[in-house]
Image 1: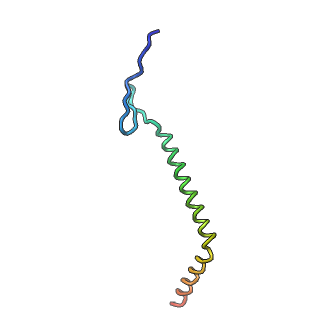
Image 2 (image 1 turned 180 degrees about the vertical axis):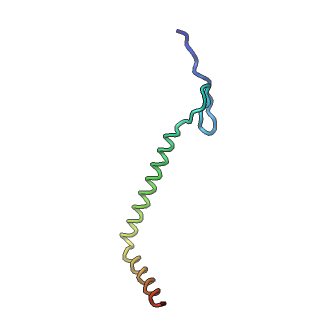
Image 3 (image 1 turned 45 degrees about the vertical axis):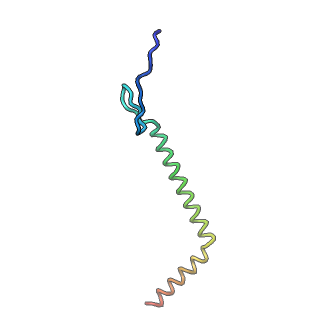
Amino acid sequence: MPQTSPPDRRVDPDGSIATVTGRARVGSTRLRGQGVVEYGLILSLSAGLAVTLLVFFGGTLSAVLKAVGDAIDAAT
């Protein structure tokens, strides 16, 4: 059986591979999945930080908002 060489390949700067058969994106699904995971991590860390800040500073925040509300009531 004669041995054939693989098709001529070259990698472009945008990450695609140009072959004799056409262009194919390398890892586009993997990169999309990575973006979703990073977005989920950022979202969960932001939510965790918000909950932590409300637990520690909830009383102070409540007092500040009450003072602002009282000032608005006094002004009207």
